[in-house]
Image (cartoon, rainbow, N blue to C red):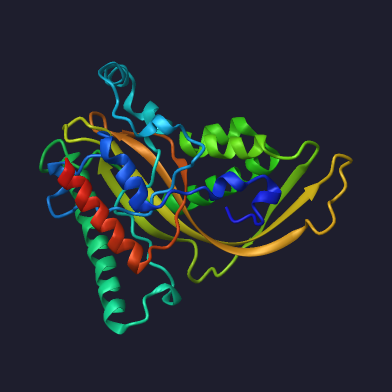
Length: 312
């Protein structure tokens, strides 16, 4: 959320991001993020994306789960694992930037656009493969329901609810609608606020309606090689809005100069967990916001992913 300046609103934790390549190297021991299973089509490789996690999250989150932890997880409903499983942006998430974000050389522009087209093709093939695998028989309907028409309204509702809860300091609401990592980060930012300060936030209007909101990425990726491995479904929706924020002192008066109105574009990522045994999915939760992909960043992340897969 671009409620700038973040530090003055106690939102500094929201800007604590680990870059994709760094996180890929840190995730070398994480067994929960495996290359796509055979159902997801061999060509749909998982290139590393802009993966956002909080530095406030536990440093041990990158450790491979123990045997006892795996047994405990196996005894739980797959969809109940959503808060813990949705800890990062799915590798391979490609958010096409505006034209100003493209590289200047024409050749690089074309290659960058070609990479985006390839990623979108892989998304379609992978998602279609997973949906096809939910068909009990060849002539029956798929049990997995995409319901794409609900994705944008859901993202808008979660985006607004999270911003209001953050401004109000409502930790219960944050824990209810956010992934575990994001919730830890936002609750830490609430705890770091100066005593006696209150914050207000308001969504004035949605802007640039011709282009926003729009779905920028829609990925489904298994968390393991097993046939019954949970599947992460992640959607990134670009939202353009005009927002107003204000800071109040302990007496309830507006802090001079704190009331500001700004127009921002945010790539809001939300996710859920699909149980491949029943094809039921958990409630949607916010994962974070994603920066547009850059030409150099994409090349570095592809290289980091190749090194990670080679080491395994």
